[in-house]
Image (tube, rainbow, N blue to C red):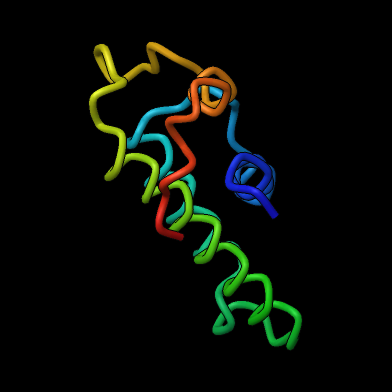
Length: 94
């Protein structure tokens, strides 16, 4: 799966808008971890959901760590699709 598809899948898993900042990402991650935490839910599927949420968070966090230069007041200058089209996302280490 190419990196742009992983990025979009991670956004879908965390239920984020296409344009978000690091603060929104961290808040959404914490909220979802609380919502699906195994101590609050005895279902075995919740552990899989937690793993999926953590993996999605790591993918999106790597975007912020690797491409900090594309921000202006915590908003994207370029959308992820524009970055992908410009071949800036091909060297991600995920």
